[in-house]
Image 1 (cartoon, rainbow, N blue to C red):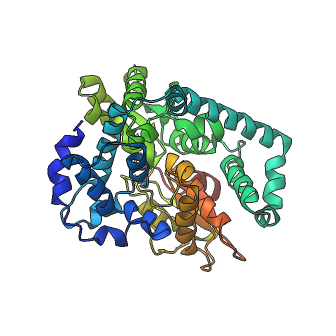
Image 2: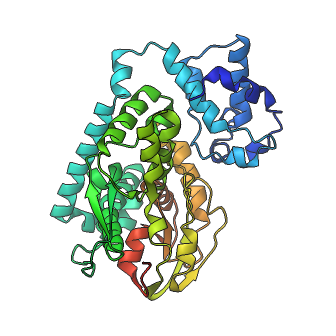
Image 3: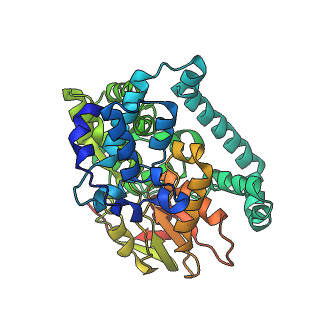
Length: 407
């Protein structure tokens, strides 16, 4: 793990050309120069020279970043801005003596408590039928303003899509996989987990569930690497059995779990990361057919490291629409959406404008946070017909059937 001072050469290497400005989603939504990589590098350059120091204001500007890393792909010098900003924020936490209140707000205890409370609310809404009421009156609720939009967004999180009565054909299990369910499946809505299990059991892959903690990506992105490393080591130790795969269905979890080996220089971490496998990789050879003609598009998460788009394109009976900026940030990015709500909502709105007016039925993605971003954008748009944002595995299990086996 490199320290902030190790990036001094990269920070100097930035020519301040401004090309990052054209691809930065935060700048597009805010027109704030400090949101752009070159603006942040100007601040960090001041710190290196001793003209500035790591303060709350500096941290605030560093937090004006979704971590999408679009600037790296567009940078003539190939500077990895995301890595530099994480290292800088890590330095902030080293220098800053947090108050008890700040420590509590940054604690995993609070994060987990909020997840449990959200999960309890989700359970009550489902068993009371309130989710169906909100869904039915969604268009009316959206017109009530900000709170109505937040209610619709919450409902999109917890609304049950995958039918529990569906079950895979019984088959002999050929392989065993440890399943990393992630916070969304574990606490809020397990539709995706059920869909993944449904699809993989047909391929002879059985699940072993461990009580994993959060993958830690939000803490890593925030520079709070002390908390990230605690979660990382806990998860590594819980993978205590011999298995072929450690499966995840979330693009962000998949990304950070594979990074464990770079943050913990141990054989256990290397073994853990080497087994991490996106569920897409285990279904990519299956031939699917839609149960009815459907028009679909995709959103590629920023942390996506496997190409699920080819899986979607190969589904028979669908009309695939390639939408402009399909691979650009959705604007949610966890803690960023809480700290910068207006900017997050504007990024999501701009994103989803590309998907409306095209008669698209579904927008398919592989990240729970991206589903929130897509639905956040849809709530901000007034359109006669809006597509439904849906997880890839739920879409395959609910709206498709398989034509052949992968194994």
